[in-house]
Length: 163
Image 1 (spheres, one colour):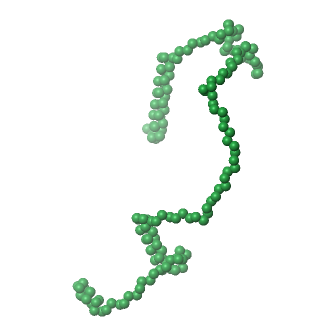
Image 2: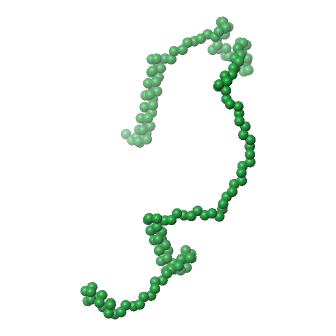
Image 3: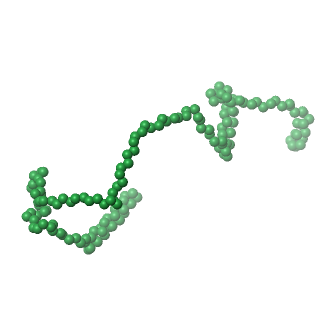
């Protein structure tokens, strides 16, 4: 059986829905809705109401007199009178163009990664100062220190034991 999951899901859904519909139909057949057929007041009708308009031309007007039903007003169920709101021109919009939003200060690992990116840029600028990104970056050269005396270096070598 090579049925996909979506095909099986669709089949099960269809089965569930059709079972519900069939159950509703069975209920309607067992317990049908009761209604009474009421004859209109005014005596016997010369024609059957089902076929009164059969084979009539378009625009045919029925000659049966109709009773006009006059509307009456219930004060407590009336809508309030309409409120008219006059139109007014919209107010001019003022925009401040020169204000720049200030970025929040970096904290946590964002601050660490920003420092790493800045250090990498400084290294690149120290190696190649022709880059466009190097404008405005000052590279601080370490101060030249005095060379150590030979005696201090010899003591350090003797202390480490690599003679």
